[in-house]
Image 1: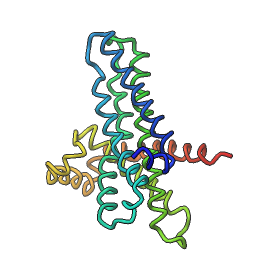
Image 2 (image 1 turned 90 degrees about the vertical axis):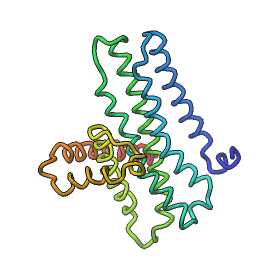
Image 3 (image 1 turned 120 degrees about the vertical axis):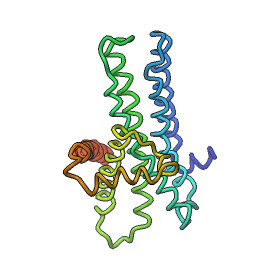
Image 4 (image 1 turned 90 degrees about the horizontal axis):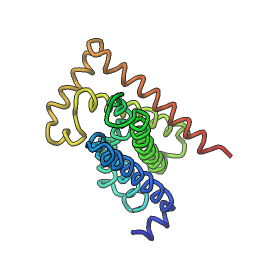
Length: 224
């Protein structure tokens, strides 16, 4: 497996993301031991959920045969879309920031931002993997900006996923355990958008924010 990761040129990326994740874990454990409270340990679970989309696309990139499968690849892409909103979701954990807590507010701010940054990296790296996979599937005569446009749309879908996770308290696996209740909640907001302005307001502005970050990353990535 390690040889395949190196062959796919994912070794340094894997080490870097693993190191960032361990650093975040260390920050949260230091807070736990120093303050004597378990506050913000939940961030590690949220980070793990953000890791899943990257793990799925990395598996598809490393295992080339997966990209050729007409069954495994669609399933993998479906699970990716299901878990992708967990990457930007960690940004909303800033809502938990409070002054007068067991730790200085500056430490908690840096702690949450470290987890949010690492989670976003997992999300964007997995999104670029999806772009690579899609570019292999889409015919070459289609406009080259088609895949980036799809990515923009996926970021807005992910933003809606952040909303239903933060405010409606749905989890990624609820689509399996409680599918009818989940789709009912989504359907109500789709069919009656004017009665749920906050849902679409957050989706719109979170989507715009994620696209700002996405295009910024693309600019940096292509900078000579």
